[in-house]
Image 1 (cartoon, rainbow, N blue to C red):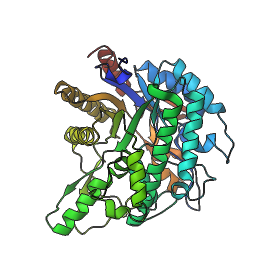
Image 2: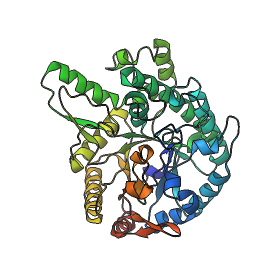
Image 3: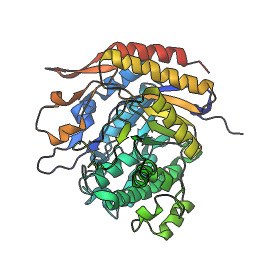
Length: 419
C-alpha cells in the first residue's frame, strides 16, 4: 500500500501565490506584460521566497516564464529558473508549478491558435520535468484555461486576438490538446510521485433568465466555464451541451482521442474572487468581455465560494483547493475576507467536504493587466491585494509587511498541526 500523498494527510494546507502573468507580445498601443518584471521578482526572488516562508506558507503557487526559458526555437535558457528553483526549495516551500500562466514565446506565430502549439508546450513540459522532476513534483499544466480561451479566443483582448464563439472553440480546443500532452509528458518523466493540480476560474452567472433564449445563453455560459477541463478529462461526447459549438474545431475523431487520453486532476483548484467571480447576466445585453466591456459583477461572498468548491468537486470527483482568492481593497477589507473565507473552508471540512488547501493570492501586491493598454507608469496600476505592500523607493520596489501578513501567519501557526 502506498503512503498518502501530501494533500491526503487530513490537514488543511495553507499557501500563497506570486502573480505570474506573462503576455510578451507587443503591438502598437499594447505593451508586453510580465508581472515578474513589473514587481521586480526576477531580482528579489530570494527575498520573496523568504517572505512566503516567514508567514508560515507551506505551498507556493509559482509560475515559470516560458517565453524567457525558450527565447527562440530549439534554444533553452534555464539560468534564472535554476537559481530560483534552488532558492524556493531552500526556503522550505513546496512549489506547485504554474507551467503556463498565459502567454507563449514571441516566436510562436498565432500563439495558442498555432497548429504546433500543443507540441511546443508539451516539449516545454517534458524538458522542465527532465530538469526539475527529481525535486519538483506538483504541477498545474495550464492556469485558468477558461480565461485563456475568453481573452485570446472570444474577446480579442490578448494574442492571437480571435473573437466570437468560433474563436473561443478554437483556442479552447488547442489549449486542451497541449494540456493533455503536457500532463502526459510530466507524468512520464516523474512517475507516481507527480501531483497534478488543475486550476480554473470559478466564473458563475446570476440574473434574469425567464425567456427561453436567455436561458439558452445563460446555460452556454455556465458550461463554457468548464469546457477545457471537460475536454482534457474526456467528458465531452455527443451529449455534451457544447458539442455542437466545438465544431469544426474538434472532430469526432479528436473527441475519441481526448477520451482515450483523458488526464485527471489529483486536486481540482478553484480560483475565486468574491468581487469579480460572479457576473450579472442581463437579457439582451451583449458584452465584449475583457476590460473594454465587462459584465457587471455581483459580490456573493462566501456563499459563492462554497458553491464553486462544491460544483468543481462534484463535477470532477477530486479533492478541491482554493488556489486563488483575495479582495483588492484596504487592509481591513482583506483581513475580513481572509477570516471569512478560511472560516468557510474550515466549516466545509467539518461537514466532510474534500477541501485540502487554501491559497491567498498574491503574496505581495501586483499590477493590473490594464497596464498593457496604457502608457502610464506602473504605480498608476497598483492593486492592493497582498500580505505585503509594494513600495516605490530609490532602491526599487520594497516589500513592506502589512497586518494581513500577521493574520495569515496566525492561521498558518494554528493549522500546521490541526487535522
